Image 1 (cartoon, rainbow, N blue to C red):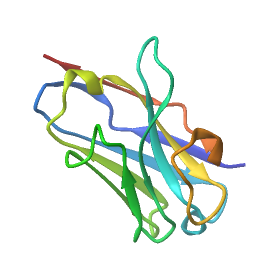
Image 2 (cartoon, rainbow, N blue to C red):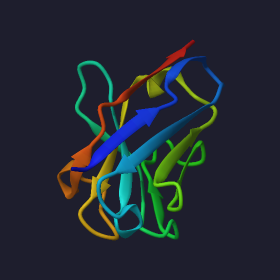
Image 3 (spheres, rainbow, N blue to C red):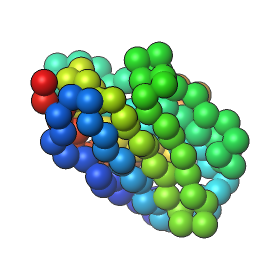
Image 4 (cartoon, one colour):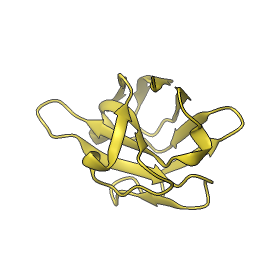
Length: 124
């Protein structure tokens, strides 16, 4: 049984930083791509960032490029999202997800397992 548990969300002022973590268990973490998605109230879930199995490949949504950094520590079965220069429009529930193989794309249907989400609120 795969479990993904996000942590690190909270309330921050615009321009501030947060670091999200996603702890994974249940299958060999290093074999699978991972991703971050977010969902704001009244909006559909959207892609934020993704990372390949080794961490050598990363990709970002245009809206976060240059501000967010995705990374993973396969020895700790954990993925991270460092979020800098946060904006009010970054306010959302952030979800981590585990893909089907070593590389997964930006679509939500390419991911098999999801965490419960962590709230990020950016005040202006």
